[in-house]
Image 1 (spheres, rainbow, N blue to C red):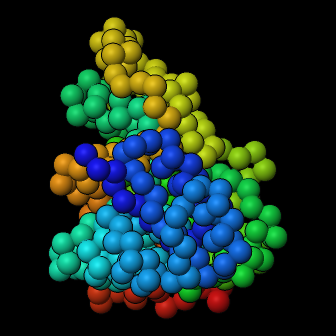
Image 2 (image 1 turned 90 degrees about the vertical axis):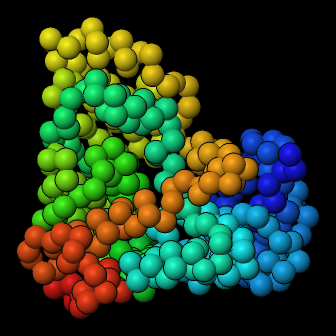
Length: 360
């Protein structure tokens, strides 16, 4: 089959990860063009990754290159407008997290998918490492029993100079602080394992950094399957760590990493009476693939060839984005929040900060 024609919009740091991951897919894809408003940065990117077509604007690229898939690697504030233009042109979209600044923008993209027959997917690469695939398969097979308790902690460090970049730490350009821009990866994996959430109670603080947004949030989340989870998103933690723990009836499963994991970053502790069964299933499960852009991109390409929606679909991303919005809504209204509280009537549907955090 012919390679999938791919284009990249935005040629900064994250775009380099995309180009390198695409390069490792070999003949499956062909990078046909790139867009950036910074001509020097665009030229350097295209020279480095042998990209034949260089465009100062997206409209020109869509018209001349007609890519089947467009990777959007720009800051979050531009995601909605760029993705909408791609969908209108019939190009599928793979957008970096967060897909939009709010739920209303995401709903507009979902409607555009239906109208124009193209698909939107979000980069949540932690779903695609074999550790997560193995855990999900064991849960589906009933080997682990019911999920009971979970921990989802993104405890990272970003100093003040990080927030001093013009578009960071602002509601109108980044959509939020660590809840939206950092912990969202772990929160997405939490939802991928535990499914639909039903209620969240949260707080958000400006604990140490100068910015419009929070630098810390903490939440208690209830899920439809009865599980409960503790969620922490921090940019104040000197010893950085991404940690997820799932306590099931028959085993505890833990993942400790920072920005990406391999099989060795997972641990399983079976209940004594289920040791043989649980360990046998764990050892027989999928193995050998790290969580990475390449792992997700390979699945996206496979889906496009098969004519099925690429992962992570807009429906899946919407569940995670609703949880993010729920954390903010609960923190700023100081009450528990469920998905039904985040409809179009809610101020948190169109703005993650709603009517504004208390510290404003």
